[in-house]
Image (cartoon, rainbow over all chains, first blue to last red):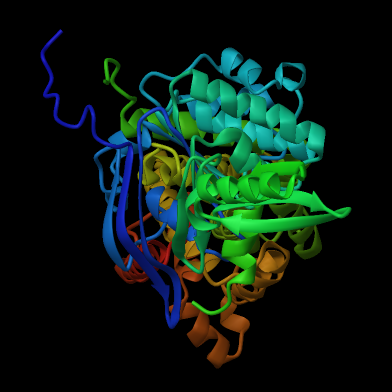
Length: 293
Length: 248
């Protein structure tokens, strides 16, 4: 095999720097920057209208940015290079299916556009639709249609997969099934950019999460660590039957003071707890409680 | 790392064409009536006006022209509005399928229907009404191709003006029905008021029918003016079709 230039091998799968997008007077995206590393599941989490879909559709090549730098697998998606499209799989928030085409026919047909597609049968099995292979799209349930969306995005064996709110409207069981498929993509070494407004989804699936609000990232990090910088720790204990709660950025110092004072009084701190805020608390604080911006 | 080359744009257009043919026949009743309606109009009009030779010689090319418009202009306006509203165009846009391959396959399917339909009209005209077979079949194919290009481009362009699929039949028929009524499909347009004759002469259908009549029945040289009008509409339609194409 010929030696290939190594430049780019270690570079990010997605790089976004100061991305902006305006629709007339409306600024949908206002200076977003982030990078997604190869093999990573990256979550854009935020309420509806935060600019997640606009951002993803710019990365997918559907929209032109107003300004900023964007690289997807080393390409500028605005150029719509076929060689880029061959390496990317897209699950849109909503997109149609030919009503009279079976699952197998659809997957087989879409496979033809790719240079080295995944086996259609295997792809259908990957998303768990083997029972419905001969069912027509219009006969599928909402969750099954969504899985067919995923199969059509995966049949080209892409390195990078965009999932725009892949489980919106799912019942809890269907959501868990979809999560298992996405976990399997990570196991296959795929890079995934996921948007969601379900906290739990970001928490369960993403290696790193960016919380998006009003077209900008307000916090970023692994879901478990996201709270630590902003809202600090909560220390609580029971005092005369009532729970006392304190917030601190330095739990060591606070605990030392609390326990020292308690020991000096000859008391015990009943029900002592130290907790970091959950992602949910951080999310609500960053997206709901903060006004203005 | 790409070890396998992808299919060429032309090969993909062929795959898309085959897929579109499958989709077309997947709805057999729609396919059946699609082909039946023009034949029904041919038979009914012929039986209303009896076996007037001149009329039949005009009616068969007229129905052929109408068929070209129905299978391209109407079908593509409907189809694209449906595909756009359903989000199928947007999905295709997100794959490596080149736009020209996809639209080529889609257009090719409409063209195939046009040729089948014109073939049926010629066959029924000949077998049932004794209208002669086209003396120069190759020339007929060229004329049908010109009409198909014209009404196909106009159909794609027109789909941009249709707001949603529910409105598509009303929009398409608002253009199609008046056009076939003034363009001499069922009767000679000479009996129409001058104003309508003027409109018909600006539109491409009457000229397409004129070219079809020359190739199918009369023989002799094709009208340069008719070719010019149809070609002008083709160019304008193609420009609008490409310039304002929307995938979503």
